[in-house]
Length: 412
Image (cartoon, rainbow, N blue to C red; front, side, top):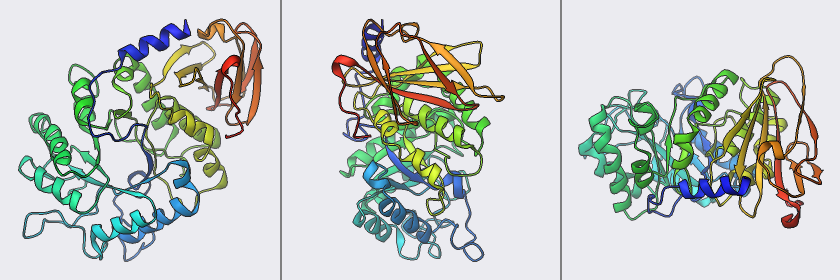
């Protein structure tokens, strides 16, 4: 049954994709928006305002604290970086006070560290925060500007535009970026402005023009926000799962681990569920003040390996039971798979009993690695009963191999 489902998922994947060779696994990195928003008060809050200094700080942390070695390679500028008007040639330009050396020198600094630079623009008259947007007539100019600046990723938002403009603009930007000759990952926000689902959203077309796309509303710094996103994605999994794969990813938005709204257990849950969804792992937090607990979750090598699995199949929710436990499954390369057991209970730890056969695993013996406890669980048969304890608003996450293909797990 498990093998049959895996084959069906593989056959369901679209054959067409954006042919730029980029984002073959979900992009990983850091973005400013959720944590720092549009704080431009550099006079009174110089360490936390949207500025060249902030992005340099985060770039240094990504390298010096081991993030880059784990795959967190993109440093992404979000809204509020630009000046309030274009220059005399009609080109976007950064705020000269907050970015005194300009974007090209920031890109050079970032590249010297081994990182890649992302930037934000908006398909509309103005960005969501009111800065100059990109109209249809300005798309080619902006794409060329970003390429000349040596940008590596573009997040293209959609505030202050209509459906017709978006229908023309998002594909036009894809063509314009490709025409520059510079490899630029294209992250488009088109689906969220069209309701996120077919028939308003054509995911076959999206896979041909974008490397990743925002499907749903912005994440907020709360567990309720995480659950709202999780619910929407998995209630819609029959539409979303086939659209995802190497070079084209559904994006449930940023990781908020290390901020203020999630408990330790909820932080593990977000990390695990984003890995199951094959989601981009884009942090939005303050890497300068991150706790060791948050760092350990975000730097968990096994969870990252699951997220970055080269097969690139997005996982699914396979079970909701009356004990407020949900089970999510993702097929991985080399006959492996991942399971996440999520508790929506808020009262006490819950002892969950099951077997792999009840979760559609076929005949055989299995070994599971508990990625957060760093423990091995041996299951001599798919019918072997197991019991796990799941904390309130928490998860247990297993990385599972059939015993005949088990490989050394020490790399984690």
